[in-house]
Length: 232
Image (cartoon, rainbow, N blue to C red):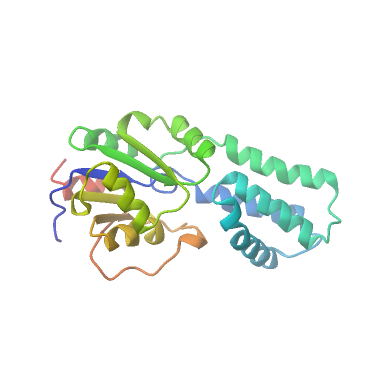
């Protein structure tokens, strides 16, 4: 395999790269399906919710609070505004529980970040609601490993280029690590940076893209990137 060389900065995605995230959205949709079972079946509900999320994303962005608003809108639509107030309160509680959820790190994350931080500056580049992302980072206990934190509304080539320009890092000296082809791999390859994809079977529907043709490394857990960088 080609080696990763001349790295001066390593970037990490957060949700579903460092800690579990998508699984809680899957559970939330199942909870919504139970509440709305008198009005719609689970498969039809998924299609309705997906369409509403797509409509709302340009307005609300990403994160639990945006998702909760979409849950509520979906519930009103499929029930034809007949949903009892007590059920709407249950939907609000789904969102509250997601916000209060403990952070579960993936295996070897803490040890790998600790080892890498001895040799490289690290940056966290995550998208979503700022308050929610800050809360999760604090709960994770990983903040001390990062020299820079970037919470953005979207990840695209221009956004990565702007971050690297501010930090005076040329793209060829930047390595991005993440689970999403759409957000973490394709945009950085497009600007000439390097990438490591963390394989994840629970990638969010909106993040799914075909595997890019240009070269990148793929790993199943974070510690596998150490030998790629000549570390043990």
